[in-house]
Image (cartoon, rainbow, N blue to C red):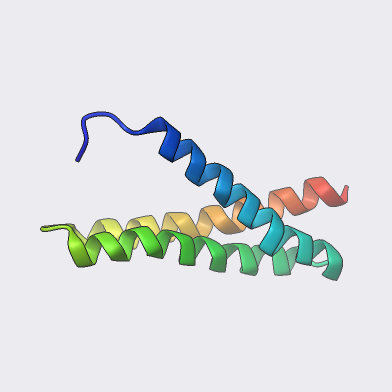
Length: 93
């Protein structure tokens, strides 16, 4: 692991993640007028996005803890759902 994060890469990821949430989740949820679509599609996008990182690390990084993968997947799934619903509610009200 690096001693300090690459802030450009971190910021780039989260900007792309936000764009993905808006394009793939919030826009369709607004068209459907469905906060529940925003929740579940956001959770799914969060799960897929965080799986890319966590499962790659699990497969390639020596001694990567499976517990960290599970916890991070739960956090990413929750984050995706919460951010999507909050964004949907802000846009609709």
